[in-house]
Image (tube, rainbow, N blue to C red):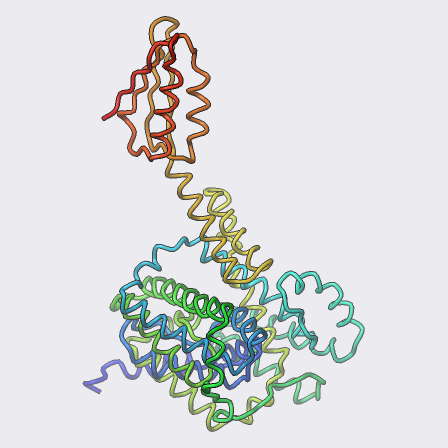
Length: 484
């Protein structure tokens, strides 16, 4: 005990995290179009591999709802055997980024883009899981999912089995929402676990006609990528998916690390090492043909709130997941799929920052616009291109705001017209500057003072010189430029 002074607190916290992780691992796997056991395998690797490595001491890794849409698209487009190759390559890319000390740069990503990404994922996840809740097949695209909901609702209301399936999903969501308000020891049980257990008990007791988890066995679900699947790496689309996996998983993990650091007073996260730990975990997941992993804020915050003190808690949670998957596989076959869909609908709803968007709109509408455009782009196109659109818009917004320039014209009616420029004169503000200069009297001398400019880019410098040459014609007094 002297060697592990906090073993009791860590063991207790690990059980709480394990109970939170089980339904989420299963739900993410099923929603990703993969066997349920693969979600457990990723959770096990997150505990036993990533959990042992240095980086962040208390955050917990595993399959995440934030990657569900991207994983589903990859499995749908390239097949389940190719998933291992994609995850393996993404893990190696994360290792390389960590070795190059790029981890800290993820902290510079626009928070609005990250929140917009999560909001877009949440919207697509909710739309897709509404079909799963009714036992219906969801369309492929995000827009098609949303547009098809009215027809799906009509189909669901017309059938007895679909209505039963919807009732189980709705009941699961309702239990999760209300469970947190229960007083006493019952409220300490994770709401997702309680909801799944209740849904399983009700469907089994009353023989409710709903689909349940298909069990393949832990070891039968492991599919290491073979040499025949390496050919997918020649596909440009696969390479884009690998980059998307690596960047999005890294960003989500490191933003989660920053959030977890605010929850405790222990050692701070070492971002480059944490990025390499995530890369090592994803490399192992790829070799096992499992789902990609990322740090998960829900499990991480549960770990901290349960009193974890060291990384032993997250390692032990991986041990409990392994024992559960190896010793109790038959339990999985009793879990109704609509219950897992309900868990992910609830998770998708929590990904959408409703309050944050209202606050941004009141104080920083530009950031709110970036968030909304990123989310809509993910729904309309796909996750990777949606994030790129959001990043591009964020860069343009920042460039526009940083190029603020103040232009003052003093005309006393006689003598030279005085023009004073201050701030940052960039090409983005060039139309405004030239419009003002070209409206000045042509028959009067102009004194253009540039000494107060913090920055004058090449485009503005060249344009001002050309304007001065044109204004200083044969019949016009010359322009007097004053620079530092």
